Amino acid sequence: MRNLAIASVAALALGLAACSAETENKTEAAADAAGEDIESNVNAAGEVIENAADDVEASVDEAAKDLDAEADKAGDKIEKEWDDAKAEAEEEAQ
Image (tube, rainbow, N blue to C red; front, side, top):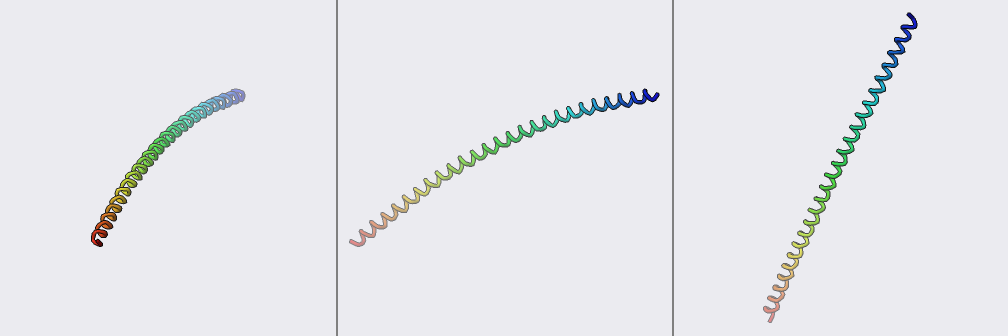
């Protein structure tokens, strides 16, 4: 009877060890899959951020070009008005 009890306990221990190994393998597989999902999501987020940064940079460049063009127009207008005022003053002085 004692041998039967020892054999039963040993069989139970082996069964639990097998279950534990299977659970560990499944847990590892789930963790690996989760890690791959996280990596994929991080990569996708990185691409979205990079694309957004590229869009912002392009918009800033375009705004800078527009600002330069407007500044040139304003400078040309001021210069023309100055020349006109100078010419008018010279005509009045004669």
